[in-house]
Image: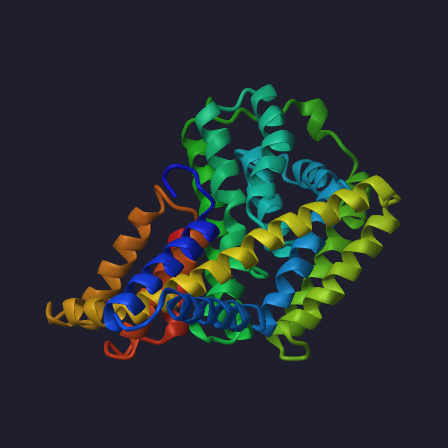
Length: 372
């Protein structure tokens, strides 16, 4: 992984090699062909088990919805309308950036695209207005990563599939912490701007002198349609009216209609959205398959029992275990992506939750907040 080799194939390769070694050592009478058959049976069963997880169908649909919204320049319109509406607030451009990121996070489960897009939209605007570079970058990076926590997060879908926790409960649990975190970011920017106005100068009067009717029109044509789509998709999941997959399908169709309504749905943009969706979905799904094969080999070698015995020998309380696990996850965030942390390390932590009487839902929300 550190050398840059694809994580999914690293996990698959290591899983198969060590499963082969395990079968050879445990039964030396097996021929190479028989050992190979066992390894490939393990690989096929693990891959099939991963890819028949129904909730994973929602992953490409949510990603497609996000890329449609991005390619249709809806976020560009939204940022401009929020920038105009919040012009009188301290650090208004930073506040508008965080708010746009949070709304885009609720329109898509993808993370990298938000950071890239807001880097192109918001950073030049903030630098032109004389904003401090550190504060500008600091508004984009955490705001752009809110998609890890705020539904419809792909990370929560992967955790739900790994831990066997309903995605609807994860979404309902993550929504409030996500909004609270967004509010804290906004409050921080406003306080910094208030205490040190040179970090985030006020916008010129001519940029603020926009009639109320024009502001209202900008919000009605950018924020309201997207907000209605998000409310319908997430509301139907949380209320139990639709499964995450059904709601994702409706969201993808809604994103298509929005792009059509804004007259931004061209063949080139649609093709780009489909290609990017296929690429991102393939990465997530192959990673999930690789992790299943790796976990199967890890369990076969007694890795789970070894870690369980080691953790239990420390006689920790539930709180101490939670703190230790979250510190480990936090430190893993430097060398690894959130996808790798979820698919490789969650299967190691999850079997220990029963012993410490920790709800997997609560643990999953802590992990999501930590990774964000």
